[in-house]
Amino acid sequence: MAESTPIRVAIIGTAKRSDYLYGPLLQALPDVELVGVWGRSPDSAKQLGTSLAVPWYTDLDRLIREQAPVIGVVSVSYGANGQVGLMAVEHGLHVLVETPIAHKLSDADAVIAAARARNLKIEVAEQFHRRPLEQIKLKLLASGLFGQVHSSFNDFAGHGYHGISVMRSYLGFDARPVQATGAVRKYELAPQWSRLSDKYGPRTETQEHGIIEFEQGRLGIFHWTDVGYDSPLRWWRSSRFLAEKGMGITLGVNLEVEEQLSLLAPGGEAPQFVTIERRWERNDGGALVALVAHTGDPAQPIVRWDNPFTPVVKGHGVQWHDDEIGVASCIMSLIDAVRSGGEPSYGPEQGRLDQELITALRQSSADGGRPVQLPLDPATQSL
Image (cartoon, rainbow, N blue to C red):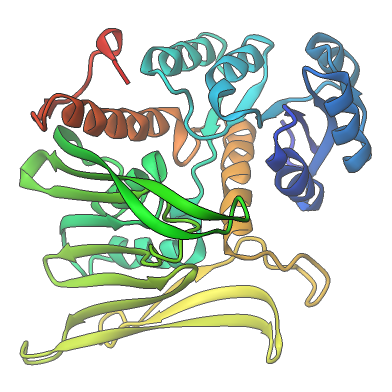
């Protein structure tokens, strides 16, 4: 596909993110054209199409025939990702599918196999590691300054596959897991306000904890509580890595986070902290231009991540927050793969592995904490 030709995209599904997130992002991205939306229900499809000012359909064949989309962004109810993702692929669309790619590993395998048979691309909307603060950390790790990461932690930085993905990103997505041990427990909590439901009362939380062993003895540690996004009792949010030549800790109270990254100071007797600077379009703000890490290392004093969505003309463009930048990066990963014929930067196999690992932790817990060997057999998946 020619670089100058806008890539035609349809939204497949009418979940909330279709309207408030995917629609505005697609309409703001250059060289991308949102050409229509599909939904099962005429009422929800019409409501979404009207909101985004594009044609709406309940017949996917007709949408494809009349609007000729190349990509489908699958945004449906939580449990329908695999089913609708497979439907979109079988209709000949490259797809961006929401997380998880499918709840059952066998369903994920069906989606992946269908795409391969049709030479179609799949990207998974796993945006956590694409957020600016995560991207600058990954660039620092790729620079070699920290050496090899020995152990990586997710401390309530994200639930399920999201938290697994954050933890794996520091080890490198090529690190191969070999065993998982998990513990899942339920506990009663004091009465409190829930921000998401806007209700006050007693609550029960489910805590998930796990250890994932990787090749070469490397470790991934996972912690999560299902009230972690909206409970005043569970405000902590952190991710960490312990590396050969330094360490990194995200310190967070809810969404207010700061990074503490350190290498060895000259002489090897103290930590030397890395300073991360946000650079904006203007002295009073505007769009994010870059994150710059000042390392204190004479050989590599600066490591920089540039925001790929910085407006070409200062002040004339979007000013997305970090999560929107992450999701837009998922979309562009798929678009770049479609244009180049290459592969998405994350891809369906990584999305499947994240789901496999959280499944393995839960299976281990259900079996009394017995370690579960990896990979899992999709035919025996119980959770």
